[in-house]
Amino acid sequence: MPSPNANSIIVLDFETTGLSPLQGDRAIEIGAVKITNGVVVDSFQELMNPGRPVSTFIAEYTGITNAMLRNAAPCEEVMARFADFIGDENLLAHNASFDQKFLDAEFSRINHNYAGEFACTLLTSRRIYQDAPNHKLGTLVNYKDLAEDGTFHRALFDAEMTAKLWLTMLDDIRDNYQINNVEFSLIKRLAKTSKANVNKFFASFS
DNA sequence: TGCCAGGCCCTCTTTAGGGCCTT
Image 1 (cartoon, rainbow, N blue to C red):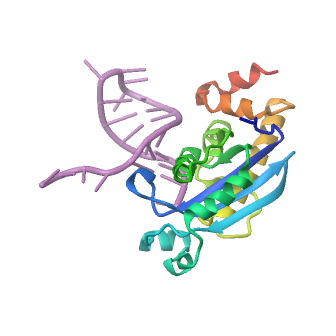
Image 2 (tube, helix red, strand yellow):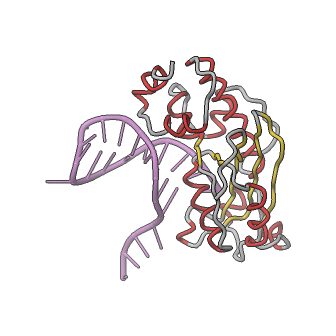
């Protein structure tokens, strides 16, 4: 299986019918951007028809209505195109465990495997932004004073904001801990480090 | 019938409980 490109990462976000694919929930929208060498170079956004109606709660939460999904392509068709978009790159999401379980569930329906590994901006932010009011995506965007022009809880906008947060976190790690080359593998190891040991973790690199 | 997500992470912990975060 090909190896992920160390210079690129796919930032993705799902909107779904609910919280659990094991309870029958499906994806209704996927949004993603590709970052290469610190720059957003490509994007992907599609609604998809989950074959079941979305609840009033989801329609209000996301702004995605049953009318909008009625003429959307089925999940299997959209996910096949998304598989081409992500290729074998590494992946990133805010609370990645959520998006990973939907990615895995939707890909399993089309018998697709992927080579990339996930990193998580939620786990990273809990370690390097320990003074943030909380670690919701919208709160962190405000906390870091990131420019925003769109609506949260739509897939592409959330992916774009997650990408901005990711690049800001990499800059902050470089600046605050004097680490020149912040690699994906370092972020993965950081996520397994307890909050109390973050300074010790970074000190081991300098 | 009754239940209904689950991984992470802290703590008054590890033979557990509960808050956070995602839709």
